[in-house]
Image 1 (cartoon, rainbow, N blue to C red):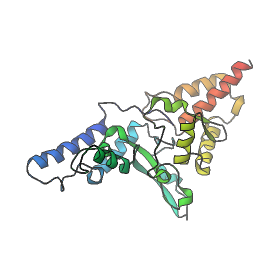
Image 2 (image 1 turned 60 degrees about the vertical axis):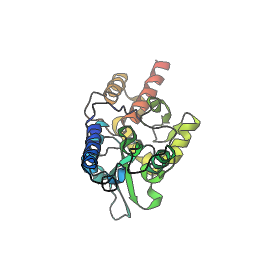
Image 3 (image 1 turned 90 degrees about the vertical axis):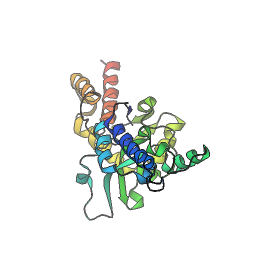
Image 4 (image 1 turned 135 degrees about the vertical axis):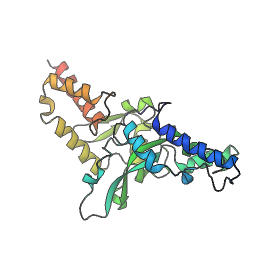
Length: 246
């Protein structure tokens, strides 16, 4: 998982704020709130918001790091499941509704976190066979102790060159479990990304490792290679081995 800041000047935030402004203006003109809802179910700009969130995330899924702009190439042939980009709620819509009502609000009438920019990210969705579900599709309403908008998320998980993922705390373990981040498909994808960028493994020259880490962690780039944070972590482990054994 990679830290995702939520800047105040975000185009994605402006998209959501614009929708809320239009709904409120219509209400002020006399249209009932039951027609102009302030809940995610009433949101009419998903096709506009989704690419804005993807661009903000450098093209990567908020949970897994897979590239979201070319998921069709990953869709298996003649299978009962496929992948697509999805707008995900870090705090589930169900939980947002419960919390709004607990505060005395009315869902749809009052604005809740289900339409909060800070709560919305882009993620991969697996559609079809339940056995293939991971990430957003597997998670459902399960709570996530660690989310990508938390700066500490980057250090919460340990990735290996073979694509495995482990938690560095109980919260990280729970997050892996609730998102099924150890699904065999993700393990294979992560392993492939490592092999693709580090084909020499631990024998990769020091200068290559240093250059690769710099590129993979360069947040000024408009996009990042998929699983960039996984490959960068493995590259840092290789570099540490070289430093320990000059």
